[in-house]
Image 1 (tube, rainbow, N blue to C red):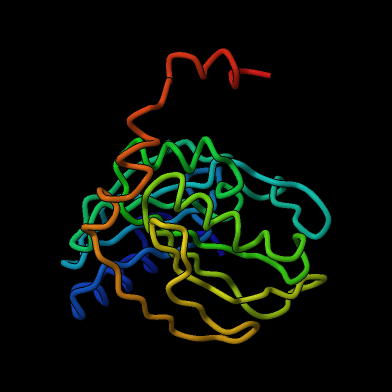
Image 2 (tube, rainbow, N blue to C red):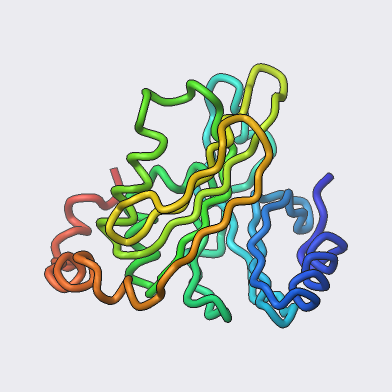
Length: 216
């Protein structure tokens, strides 16, 4: 099922982006030589493949045996200049790492897309959404989380995709457990005005952090 990037899937999405004048972030199983990655190519509105983000953190627990088929990503935390603004990607499990979410803000992202495969009942009630709301507020960007639906083996995926504004408020939400197209209007003037950009980011002390959260 894995294929290279660029490849047939990205070529098809590039054609769609060019035809409709839209920016596309997709997610696929990427093959690169003998290795395979959880990968999100980013395509600009003119159909150009701007690059790809690979999931960095690979989990292994009940029903999620990802270390058996994913290689940890090696693309860093890229930010893409698109027709829809400065965009970053946090693939699924990477969203749980505050260091990763902060790196997207340091890189200048105004919008972060989160391709997600979150199962119903996977986390305590409310944390699925609260985690993203806090990340949006602390980092001063929009977050668009796109979650899978349907059942596979021992998992039932929850759906409920949503979009958060830089103030941490949910501005659009998809229904639970069924396919839907979710629309949200965003204002790219808001991230520079956010609390995070005006206060939190300016008052950071990165020269101290390496000693606190370096290698364990």
